[in-house]
Image 1 (tube, rainbow, N blue to C red):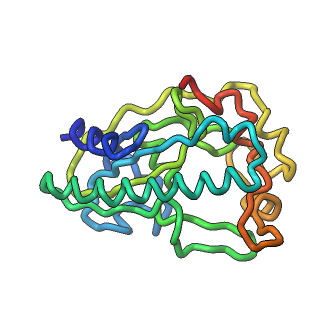
Image 2 (cartoon, rainbow, N blue to C red; image 1 turned 60 degrees about the horizontal axis):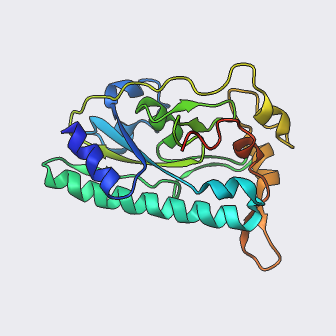
Length: 223
């Protein structure tokens, strides 16, 4: 069953897919546990889609943010269609938004939380390991990944955890952050958001910085 489910998501366009049984989510914060969303959840299917390598070589201001939006839309499409296919196999499936909408917002600290932490779900499903920039790093695809997830009542076996990919002693992402928003464990969302996101004179959203992602020696992986 596990192999068939992962095969379905790959056929729909995911670049990698893993599974985390609900038992791995014991440390999820209250309100953000998969069972807080879907009470009968027994497993989380996590998948990722990489972005083109060329995005690491250009200004992120317009091109990168548009590509990110396109990538997230693709993840939502895969999540929706993958859920339908899981239900054809006899399970119940809940497609999760890859990014928005979500409810939690701390306006003072500009801190948002998705319904489910995609990064931590990916970590638990063996998609990759967490970098000092708080991005998931996969051996093949590097950190140029966005993640999606589907909750299901099927009791599935977890995939093995990923090997550690972040390089010991490396500080490139920490030292390159113009806001000093990284401490190696977490990202200060207020410092990051104030500098990174905004709108141009035309009113379109722009992204002013992705340095912590592109300076990483593991950024593009081995693809």
